[in-house]
Structures are given as structure tokens and as C-alpha cells.
Image (tube, rainbow, N blue to C red; front, side, top):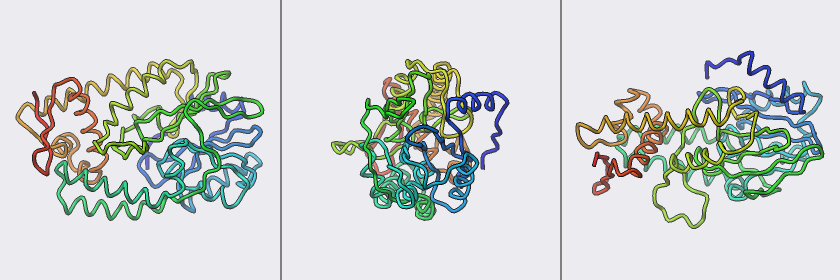
Length: 340
């Protein structure tokens, strides 16, 4: 679990959100990031933003958090899911089955959530192939694929009642939330912007205290041409759009709120550039696989977290390739990168 603890500033900002009828309900996850933040919006309809992983521990915590506000799962009328990662959407099926909640998500994501088991298995196949193509030994990729088969149980399919379009709005009695698609961390990342209150629900698009990995994932666009997605390039384009928004308080899917989102995004972008330069320096001795770069950077973590570290390395190499500083040799089964 994450060692993160909230600060006095976090408490102040969450109190500010609570004064607007928004209450953070931390829900435990089995993942290193720690708790996921679910947000109860006491409005009409009674709304929940994200719901936690599909586990008894998460469900119990969410029920207790709702009860502390005088509510039950059956009282929630609208559940909005910010993106496809199972720590955010795993319990959606419970709200669909037990209560009267409408389940809402990005229109492009809806077919995935409705058939999550099949889509997740396909994503795991893609991840295993990515690991093998970028230098991870077969026995390691096979072991990690077995772990992924178990972890997949923290997600579950759910019906979707409302498909949200990029640029559409959610009208509640006391507020209007505009919907914006911000792909990069995942293909389905969705933010909700309350322009009147200058407040944003960011999911994992922008987090305080920890950067969001631009995970290499199958795009949602049915016209995808099968080329490897450049997720960090896409993520930076999304961050640029978000930086230009008039926002004073960002409520993220993990950790504490963010109060100067444009400055934080500037730091994130500068960090990308520094890391890209570091990986460029590592190529000075000759071509390397992405896994070799990851191992040189993170040691054994590059084995236990091979897919995550590969996404990090390949994303930054894509930035270098876009500048003409790196080339990708795909002539053999194992892909290597070299400086130009």
C-alpha cells in the first residue's frame, strides 16, 4: 500500500469541497497506489464519482463512507465512472444491481465496461506481447500474465445507462458538470468540470503527489490501425488542454486535492523531458531494448512491474522519436532503440 498521508492543506481543501456538497470517500485497493478517492456529490440526483475495486473490503468501506453521510448504496441515483481502470469501476455492477443508480461513463468506454472481462483479457494479451517484443524474458511475461488473470477479478462488467460524449454536460439540480475526454493515462480518461465553482473531478488524469503513468493501452477508437499507441504523447496533449482551464480545485482519484493545476502540469511536463533525456543518455553506449533501459533505471522493479516500467520507458522514447533523436529498430522480434 502507499505510504502517503494527508496534510493539513489536504484537509482544508477537502473541507472546502465538503462545503460545496462534495465528500471524499477513501476506498482501499490492493494496489501500490493505495486508496482510491470516490466522491459523493450531495445533489439531485445523489451522485457518486467512481466506486472502487470489486472486493468485499472495498464494498464495506464504501458502505461505511456512505452511511457516515446518512446514505446507502441503494440511495445513489447516478454513478459516474471516470475511466476503465478497475480500482475506479470495479463495483459499478453492484450499483447497477442493488440500487436504482444510473451508471454513466464516456460513450467510447461504455462497450468496454459492459463486456469488461473479455476486454481485460484482450488487454492482458496485448501487455504480454508488448513485454516479449521489448525484451522481457518469456518466463517472466508468462508469470506476470498469470498474476494479471488473478487481478482481473477486481473488475466486473456492468450495464451502462448513460453514455457521455466529450463536450456534453451532466445537469444536477445545483450544478452543471461539463464532460471532457482526456486520454493518455488510459484511453477512457474523463474529467468533470464545474465551471461555476472552478472545480474539477480529474480521475487519474491529474493527481497530487504522484505522476500518472501513461499506460500503453488499446485505443477505444474502432478505426484504430493497430500501430502502437503513443500514449505519453497523447497524455501531454491532454494535459496541455487541462492546463488552460479555469480551475481552482482539482479532486483526483488518489492522494490529495490540487490547487494550482497549471503549475503542477508544468512540473509534470518538465519531468517528462528530464526523464526522456536520461533515457537518451543511456543509449549513448549503443542500441538497447526498453526493458534493458528499465532495468538500468529501476533494477528488480523492472521485472516485478515490467508492464508499468515498459510503458514509462517507451512513452519517453516516443517523445525522443518525435524529435528525431531516437529511432526504433523493429527488424527483429525483440525491438531495440538507438540514438540517431
